[in-house]
Image 1: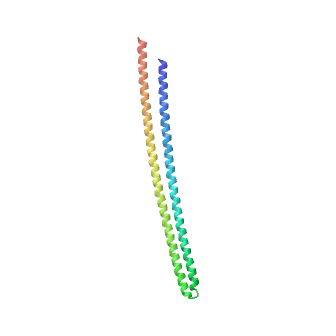
Image 2 (image 1 turned 60 degrees about the horizontal axis):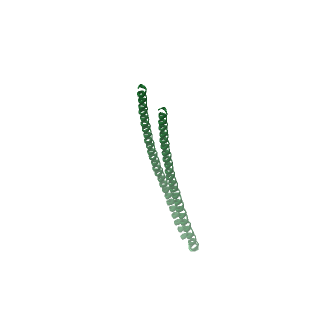
Image 3 (image 1 turned 180 degrees about the vertical axis):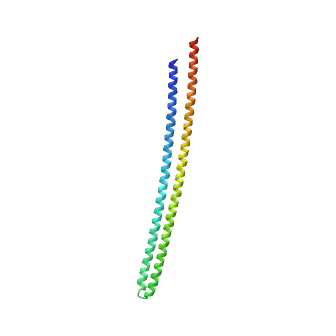
Length: 179
């Protein structure tokens, strides 16, 4: 009888250990999945920032090439008209300067707008990432609490079942000893 009781207790302990191992394995798998999702979101964010920076540099280079092309045209025009009139040359220079100044101001204004848009986009993306991360963490916590509650319920049920079994065995022993 004692050996049966010990054997059942050992089976109960084995089952309980198996359930804990299974829950712990599920927890580790879920945690790895969350880490992978966070890494993917972070890489996507970094790639978008790089793309915006490259696009901005490309636009700036094109604008500088346009300005350089205009300066080259002006220089050839100046050489042709220099003999004709100093006044025409000065007018063209003043016009070019105002165009360049206007374009530089426009470029500066565009760069400021692009920086602000990039910063706004970065902030929005960061807020979205943080929101998603917090949501994932909250879901993860809720799942963990659910798993913990299930684990505690199962342990309580197993304990109750074990206690009932022990009481039944003791009652059988008492009956067999009293007869």
